Length: 215
Ligand SMILES: C[S@@+](CC[C@H](N)C(=O)[O-])C[C@H]1O[C@@H](n2cnc3c(N)ncnc32)[C@H](O)[C@@H]1O
Image (cartoon, rainbow, N blue to C red; front, side):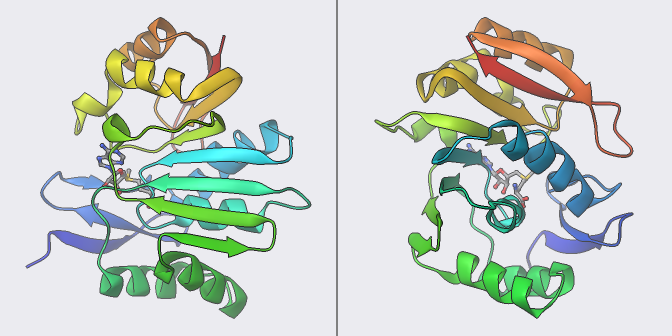
């Protein structure tokens, strides 16, 4: 029996509930709303360069990749998503079915998630890597990093200074790390790893979110 199930959130979109961790993949106040606020409005739109290389830590359902592709406008995007615990095809299909806004979005999302390791669309490439951040390396640095791990209370090892030192090695001066999390110890760890730390208003239901800018 799987320990993963779908759960409706307050904006009408669905998230996944992990029963073993007793944790959801997104905010229960609104999954789609959170993704748009944190990663698109305060990530993608604040890094207006082209091409832009994006690394997502925790690809999961592909919601952030989908929204990035849909909001790319005229830009070239090279997106790498790390996910060591891929979701089953059945669960993903169900998730996309419930969350996609219209047939066009459903087809795009399905295409992105059902593809092999690399998919090249017009002005958008997605590379899926089944590694954890701790084991991932890249010669080319990233411009923007979506840090979408489970909360520090559930997966403390993801929020250690050593992880942000590793992320710093995947960054260049000015690279931005964005996350929904605003925990104090995490922010201190991010700063110790060489990022200027900024707190921004969070999505509905959450007071703050965090952006780290590589110094
Ligand atoms: C909060 S969920 C977010 C998922 C995703 N961004 C989404 O919108 O569906 C955290 C994700 O991080 C993944 N994860 C767990 N350990 C990881 C690691 N060491 N490196 C990268 N991702 C990890 C989990 O499997 C899960 O899919």
